[in-house]
Image (cartoon, rainbow, N blue to C red; front, side):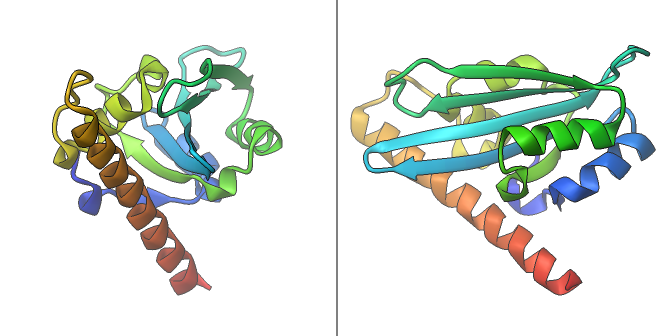
Length: 164
């Protein structure tokens, strides 16, 4: 994966056209929800499959950073890219996600791993994830990951303002 500064970022409204124009593209959307002492990662993986019946599909996961509760997974399929985005919108406020194109090495199973491991795989500047590292290092890595996504959100908002 590229460094976060090199990523092209997309709004959820851009995805239907991109999925139709570039059927081999895969997209990842990320959002962090912080409440009190809990940090949850909401991730969406979107791709177009070769299937004729319901070719557009997405896997959504919601998992707490510290594994305090079970991970939730939701699979959504649709006939058209627009329908998929509409279904995703009904599920979660996808306008607040940061979307980017993922390389072919990232698969639907990637969103099923723990949040910190996913961040380290998606953003190489964070380094390799070691779940056995000391607690202080894991907390620092989590803080860097949250900051990285905040920077991506800021870049996406600036892009939105430039278009307005």
